[in-house]
Structure formats: C-alpha cells, structure tokens
Length: 157
Image (cartoon, rainbow, N blue to C red; front, side, top):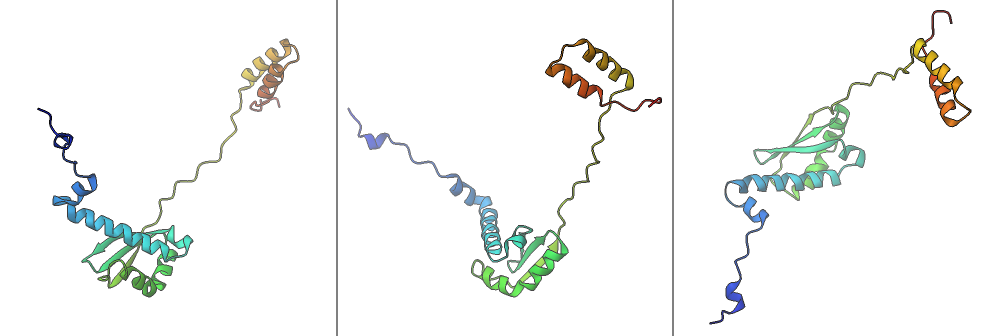
C-alpha cells in the first residue's frame, strides 16, 4: 500500500513571530512593536543631529509618550517641536495626547591620562649602548640605538 506524498507531510511549525505574539507575550510584543514604530516616526521627523541624541522610552497610560534626550539642550529643542511631533506620531498611534521629554545624559567616560613616555633606567640604557657598539651597522643596531636614547636623565646629565 502506497501512501500519497501529501499524507506524509508534517504540519508547518508556527513562526517565532506568531509564537511571541500569542499568549502572555502578546501584549508585550504589541507594545514593543508600537514603541519601535513610534521611535522610527520620531527619528524621521527630527533633524539628524537631534534624532541621534534621543529615543522613545515608553508609552504611559496609552496617551503620554516618554522621550529621553541626551542633554537639556536636546530636550528643549524637542519640546519646542512637540506640537508638530505629536501630529506626526498620531499617525502611528492616534491616542497620544502629550510628550514627556526627560533628560538622561549620555555616560561620559573619564578622560584618559596623557600617556607618559616610558623611559629606560640609565643602567639598562648603558647595556643597550654596549650591545649596539658590539654590532655591525644594521637595522638592528639602529633600532637598539633608538631604544637606548629613551632613557631617564641621570644625575650627572
């Protein structure tokens, strides 16, 4: 008895997107998708220097969009553009009634200390001088001479 090939096919497994949007994760995924669309719309309606220094953070009570800005100057510019932004963002989510702009400064790495040149002790530099003197003229000799010149000043200098 031969079976028809379609009878042997397994059902198609659900896609990861369908699994994530189903069940308990559904509302969370819906909100994440909405925030991503709002973020794209926000960035598209701001000048590039502003768009790179802010982002959508949350949607509170389905009506207040929270935007974080990298500095108070960026926040002030976004607040000045709020009426126009609200109209643009309403095309994605019509229930938005207000924008709340918060300042969240970018982390500033501590300034690196200026690099101090590494210097050889006078005794080590003397050993390199003697080694260079014993070598024939070559790239190695010239390299050792350059290295030997990077010495700490001695008391007699």
